[in-house]
Figure 1 (tube, rainbow, N blue to C red):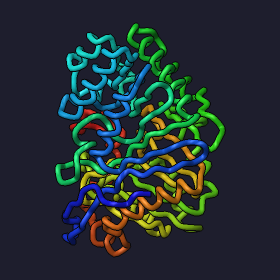
Figure 2 (figure 1 turned 60 degrees about the vertical axis):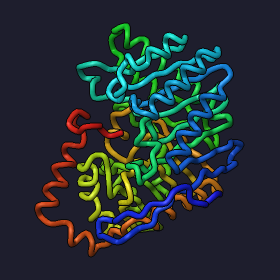
Figure 3 (figure 1 turned 180 degrees about the vertical axis):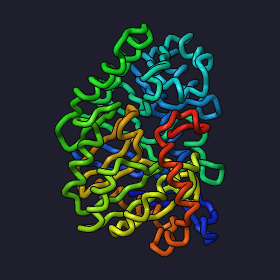
Length: 402
C-alpha cells in the first residue's frame, strides 16, 4: 500500500486544534481473483476516470447521480465525446435531480454518436426515488465506482474545498455483474421515458430479483421499499455476528434496527465510526449527533472528520468490506437506488482499515465529555428536527444527499 501523501493541508478542527492532513496516494490490492485500485485523493480520482474513458476501445457504460457543467464535468463529457468519435459505443445515464449540467450540456455527446438518457421518476409517488449510483464501465472489463460524482467538489484537494471521498477501479468477474445491472437500468429508463405505468413496481422488482453473485466479490444493490435481497439486508446479516466494525459515513441516520445492531457490536467487540464534522448539508451533522448518546453508551468509538467535507461511504465488518454509493442513512436503506460492492477478503479489509486509521488521525474524538458539553436542550431539539426532516424531498436542501 502506498502511503506517501499527495497533498497536505493545515486546517482547524471544531475544537481549534491544528491538524496536518494528507490524502493518501492510490493503493492497489489483489483479492479474491480481482484487482482493486483505490483513490482517496481527488485529483487522482479525476485522472483515473479520464484515463479509463480514454483507454476504452469498444464500449463505455456510464451512470452518475450528479453531473455538473464545471471544469471537471466538461473534462469528463469531452472525454466521452472523443471516445464516441473514435467509434466507442458510449451510453450515459444521469439522475434527473442530480443533472445540474442540463440536457443541452450533453448535446455534443449525442452529436458524436453517443446516447444520453435521464433517470426521472417524474412527479407523483415515484418523485422521491433518486438513482444515487456512480459508476463507469469500460469495455465490459473494468469499472470505476464509489462515492464521487462528476463535479469539481469531488476531485479538488481539501485546500480548494475538495471533498474527502473514495473511488475504486475493479478488474475481475464482478464487472460482468455491473454490465448486467446497467442493462436493467437502461431498460427501466427507456420504459419510464415512454410513460409506461407501474414503473415504481418494476424498479422494485428489478432490485428485489437481483442476484449479484455468491462468491467473495458481489455487486449488491438497493432500491425503494425492498428489504430481502437489498444491500442493507446482507449488511444486516454481517452485523448480527460481527465482532469488529469500522465505518466512514458522510451521512448517518440509519433505521433503529441497524443502530441497535451497531451498538451490539460495540458491546461485544470493537466498533469505530468516522462521522462528518463538515458537510454539504449542515442538518446531516445534526441528525447524526442525535444518535451519539446511545452509541457512546454501547462503547462505540466515534470521531468527527472536520478537515474538509466528508463524502466517503466505506464499511468494514470483520473481513467483509463494502464500498459504493450508499450512505448509512434512511434514504440509502429505504428509498434510493444504490449499489455496494461487497468483498470478503481479510487482506483487503486490513488495507481499508489503514485508510480509516489515517482518517481517524485527523479526526476529533467524540467522548462522553464532548457529548455532555454539546447536547444542550436547544441542540437536542435542533438535532431532532433535522432527524424528522431527513426523509423530506431533496429540494429542502440546496444539493440533496449526494
